Length: 373
Image (cartoon, rainbow, N blue to C red):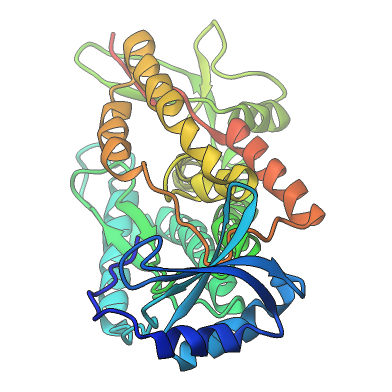
C-alpha cells in the first residue's frame, strides 16, 4: 500500500492530455473521472499493442503529465487508471544499513560463541562458523531480492539486517529490503519475490550438508536438571539427514546428530526460508501466490491462520502464536503491481509452482521442542 497525497480536482485539460498520450497504444471506450478514487481517471477499452511490451512507454508518457498508469481487469474489461502521483523515492541512508550489518555480525558471533560454551569463557571469535554461515544465507536471500528489483528498475533499499544477540537462538531476526515504488507487472513481482528464497536455498542446502557431514552422531543423554532443544524436521531436512547418515534421526534408541555451528546455521536457513514462503500477504510466498492466482490469493488468508492455530493446539508449538498475531495484522494485503493484467509467461509459471512446492519441503511444523529428563 502506498500513500497518495490529496490533490485538487483533475482538470479536463489533463484528461485530454492523458487520452491523447494513449491514442496509439490503447483504444478508449469510455472515460470516468474520480474512479476508483478521487483524483483518478479511469479509461476502459482495449490495448492496440501487447501491454507487457508497451507499458514502459505508457509509464513514461503518464509520468511527464504527473500521473502513474495502473492496469486492472474489471468484470472482463481492461481499465487503464491514471494515478495522480509520480513516485520519487528518497535516497537510502546506507550508513544505517552498514551499522545494522556490523551489529548483526557481532550478535551472530555472540550466538555462535555461546553455542556449546557450557559456562566456559566466551571468546567471541569462536562464533565465526555460525556467523559466517548464517550471514551468507541471509545475505544471499536479500541480495536476490535486491538485484531482481534493480533488474526490473524498481527503486529499493539496501538490505536491513536485524541484530538480536541475547534473546534469540539465531543471533538475528533476519533481514529485509524495502521497495520504494510498486513493481511493473506480475512477472517482475514474481522475480523479486522468488529470487530471495531461491538464492538463499542455493547456499543454505550445501551449508547444511557440510554441517551435517562434520557434526557428531551420538546418543542423547539427559542428566537431572538439564534441558535440551530438539530442532524440528522439515521434509528437506529429514531427507538431508538420511542422505548424510543413511538413516532417519533421531532413532528410537535415542541416537541423534549433535549439530555444530555450521549445521545449525543451515537448519536456521531452511527455517527462515519456510517462514518467508508462507503464502499470505507481503511475504515472499504471498507474492508467489498472488502472481499465480491474482486477487483470489486473498482466500488463503484464513486457511493459513487456522492451520497455524491448529499447530499450536495439537502440537504445542507456541512460536506460531506470534506469527498468527503478526499475520492477522500484516498479512491481509498483497503487493499489487501496476500492470495487473499481464500474466506470467510459461517459464515463470512453472518456476512459481516449483517455489510453492519448495514451501512444502522446507516448512517446519514444530520448529523446536524442549527435552527434559
